[in-house]
Image (cartoon, rainbow, N blue to C red; front, side, top):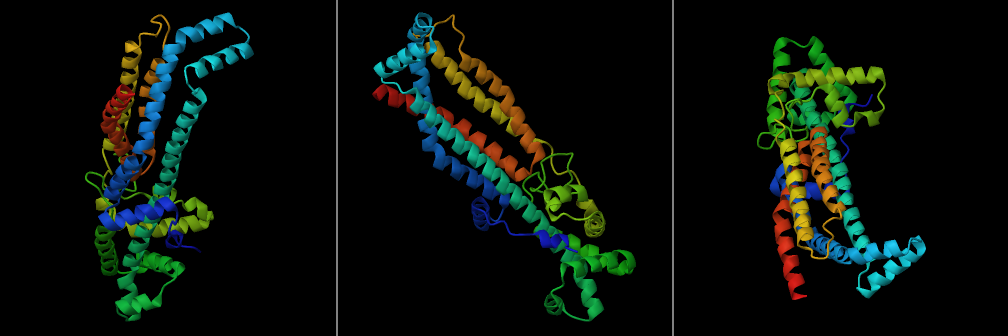
Length: 358
């Protein structure tokens, strides 16, 4: 039967390799993802600027042409003629709504694409890291016992090259038939090894688990089963029970480490920063609308209502993502939004300068 260690397949995607490369430099996955997030945002900053400027110009032109557009809609109830007249008006003003919409759609597709692919890649990295971590703990648990039983040293143990099934059998043997002294040696080895392989960041004890007081830093088997994607192994009920017995035997040594993994800090930050970022963008739109001398004060602005809706919807979505996924991905969300908040005023000032020169 395949042991859990056999599932530690190295994820070889583009994002995964970039994440591993950043970690090889900064020696901490949380810090690596923070720097990677800033790098991504700096690279896409010119695109964000172009999109923001195109959106601003489109809104300004539409607000300027709103009275004429309303007049055309009243004068030509037939949709075909109406669209034709609107097209003539746009061309007269040198405005291409399709081009602006395509630009915004392209930026949106790129942003969503980065979000989704990076989300999937970080989950792959989390599954790999938490599985290889357990693999190391398995070997630590059985190594001294096997060395004593076979009368070999550490090099001899490495030369044995035990299979996954053999390691699993030794784990069950130690947990059921070994002496108390042998069990203590095995559990102490697991504790020592865990200190070497654990991944923590500030208050988060295990970055591969959500920052939540409802989650344990040392996951129980069901949590591990989901995070490590063991469903993909298609284990039978009997195999799953054996794997569970092995896991609990090894990880029971870390019961003292099994405190809460966090305090909802990243979830709160994700919600607050999402709200503030959207508030900054909505406030800017409202100021533009108020300053627009062509706008009809009696005509409701749909962008204002949509902006208010996003100020509620986006924070809820971001909080949900942080509670359901590992802390590394939550850091990506928070840093992305902090970067957006920091650069939004700068982009707006730059757009204003460009418009004045134009």
